[in-house]
Length: 45
Image (cartoon, rainbow, N blue to C red; front, side, top):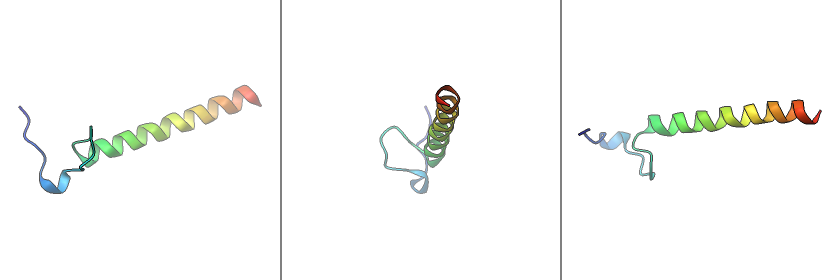
């Protein structure tokens, strides 16, 4: 079993137990959006 993170690391968000997970998620969404913008620009220009 893993130990829960300290209180200063607790996000209070469902599905995200640490701030590192939040940052990775946001970075992943950003990369997906930039990739979609690049692909759609090539397709429709």
